[in-house]
Length: 529
Ligand SMILES: C[S@@+](CC[C@H](N)C(=O)[O-])C[C@H]1O[C@@H](n2cnc3c(N)ncnc32)[C@H](O)[C@@H]1O
Image (cartoon, rainbow, N blue to C red; front, side):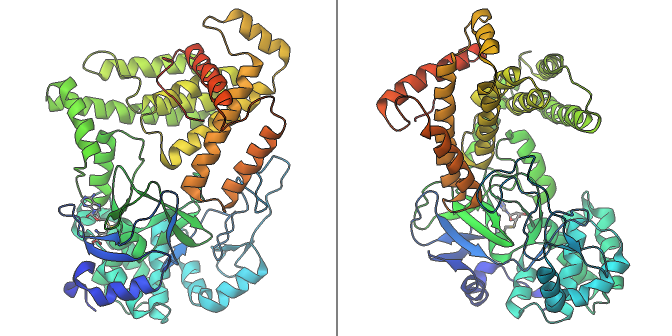
């Protein structure tokens, strides 16, 4: 098939039927034209799916690990550095990270066992090894291109997998004029030379652009570390939403899609291509630069309307807000990586003052709203920085401020925020009663008592378990680890437990007290426990 005669998925029912017959699902899925103007095809469910349910699993056409990553198996995607051990408990410093074995031919691919290495070698790596050795180090998406070309050349891709790849939107002219303009043709030429594929350069460039537009990061549920990239045709048919109804994660090298809320029969399934917590101005910029569309969803419209109200429609002012958002993120990342690399202590309060001043200066009213990103994210990062520097009380203060001002308290990023808050709380609960008492005596508004801190800890942990079950499912090791933590903590809890009115009452009082102590209005963040 040539790149000239591709028709959209929704006009090719035979191809869609074949592709859908390869996934594993308990529901009925269809590919149709998206109702979003200009979005092309989309994936729809024919039947209602409750919240927190698996919708489908799919084996991607290719997956690969970054060349530099030596903790993830390039065959089964076992992650030896995972935060959660296969037994379903969180890794501690005492748990060793087992070394992987590498391919002795190319030294590019790593495997968790001899068995994975031999199986990969026999199935496909025997064709890749020499081209990978010749290629030298490659970026992950170029590596995926090499793998696709080699698999195609050696008959390892089925006709419908190939046809599916060639039907995915490449946005070739966009990529060739955008940030990748230098790289697309160079990578395609080098890939042709190293893989000795018989495909022509135009097709190779197209496949590389398909990878740029459609590949997905491989991450484990609840973990932000990227373990690799995947090109999955059915997964890639799903369009973007800033208010997604599904979440993608991976189980080994299998793509897994779950509902984030109840989805009605006939609804389009959509996940978020970008950081769902970020503000419309940054979401827009990223979606335009990487996916070549302008999102016009209701969330984007309402956030834009708020910017327009404040800037009175002056685009220069809106651009200053966006520039400040980028600068704030960049300064924060610089501070964190400086600390990580040098270990030199950071004066977190001064850094927070500096960030707030920078933000206020860029905002038309002179006062950046505390709930406008990236301030909530910055507070949470500063909380983690305090935690890493051994100041758990300051860590709680910043984490609470960040969490309370987070607008979007749903989905995986929110679950990770809550996880980090619970971790920070455990450090304070481990502090000596003496330190605790000093805090209680000196502070105004007062710091919660130890008993109240235990109540918020149990309430947050209970909420975290609910989020993990909904976002990741009951059966994955992340949720099992949260459940063991939850059950062990509640086993020795005094008095009423989450799920009772008595607990809800004392939890609300303690939670409000903690918010007030952290300088946050007490009704800004409520949780039903
Ligand atoms: C991964 S593909 C999604 C599948 C695509 N609709 C198709 O027909 O092959 C990503 C591309 O779909 C389009 N798209 C996805 N979500 C969209 C949205 N919410 N609004 C407009 N276009 C969208 C953009 O062109 C984007 O680059």
